[in-house]
Image (tube, rainbow, N blue to C red; front, side, top):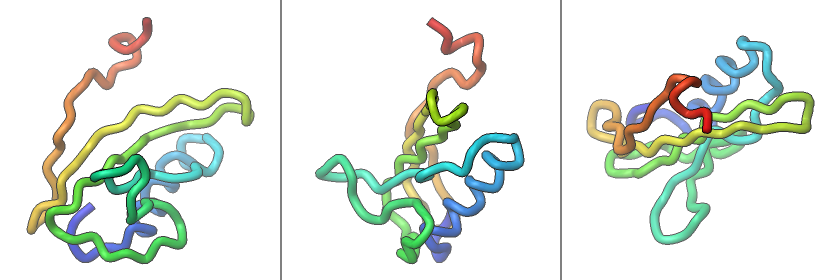
Length: 99
């Protein structure tokens, strides 16, 4: 994720990781955040928006099992001139997030 890449290219890289791990093709990788819940660009196949510095993106990592159960954890990022800065911080280990 960096300036100049297309939103759908971020999704494609994300989808490769999810599918290589043996999970179903993911619906969407994320979306921009701002004044409303779902803003453009959508980080999904077909969105050819060029990522620009200053955009704030919510990347919603998720996997679906047998089309019955879906787990999703999201992080927020701001796109910088050379890449991105992560805005959120939370535990990533499974044992730290099980209630």
